[in-house]
Length: 454
Image (cartoon, rainbow, N blue to C red; front, side, top):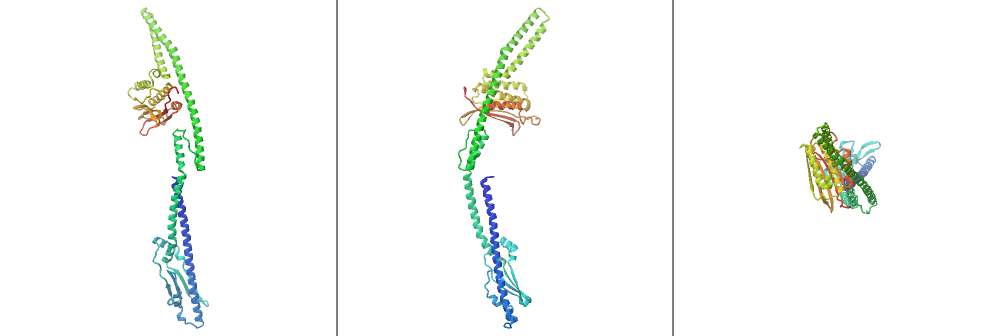
């Protein structure tokens, strides 16, 4: 949830609680005042009636005139206030009431006030003279009057509170938005770091807490840049050393073993020819030796191609990849179709870079042929311009529709994926692989182009 809206919601919640507490306090004060007025009125009337009973006892007043309500009727009652006399004799009941104001509160407020508050406002004082019960005086308010008084107290508070809370929420929203504006830069920096951009640095920020985050981010980014650079340099040296060792072994096999196998094959052919001419029994053995030497030559050529494809040195990367694709198509016998697509000037890469690209594609095709059970495997190699920086983008995608053992296609064989990652790291690039949403498997590589001689 957005922090600004979270704060606004909490402020509104606190304001609502405060308003409810203030309203409860206002209702309490209003009801207490109404109760006090009722008690005062009932006390005043009871004293007046006690005085009349005293006069009757002294024979200065007539008992039939009790209660003398004409005197009570002269009292000024508040709007909605009533005073009653409940005598022991039903004929001696008296009531006086004042009318209510026309400003009625909302129905829901009136119902709640009448249910929970109004019934507690009545004041009752018994009338007794010489231990003889003469009745009681009851002072009360009409429910509409007390509800109207309470509503007139709360309604201004409601409007003021709503305006105050709205203004406070708007002010907090914009103040917090301005204060947290650098947080967008921090999030942008984190996203760029997650994408592998370790050159981005956060500026110095005004808020102490955010500035501390900026300092830690910059220090962490610098440490990651150094460690990544060192790792890439180490991987570059290791992979280059591996390629040099492959090249050396291939050269030794070609110069030594291949020459001797060729000589052995020629010698076996000469022996077979001589034996056939002189009808010697060595002809069959010589033929077997010649076939063995030929098979060894074929195996040696395959080994040399695996160690160092001669096409890379002689014809370049693109031609070598086309030969590799053609070889896989021959092995597939039409069950799987291998396709390569190139775009841009991808044939002018450095020899070491070309070797890395070839090895990555070679390993990816081997995995696809062994595990994908796919109908089509597509290799796409292109040159792209990303904000002035030339990059190589490589993808190997298969449709992988066949049965797959659990977990086999979710991750490439460990040795293969580690080797490809090492080569991509040596190229200062990025490597991703995984199952595709519509089925199949995809491998994606992206790395900057280093100029020749760099």
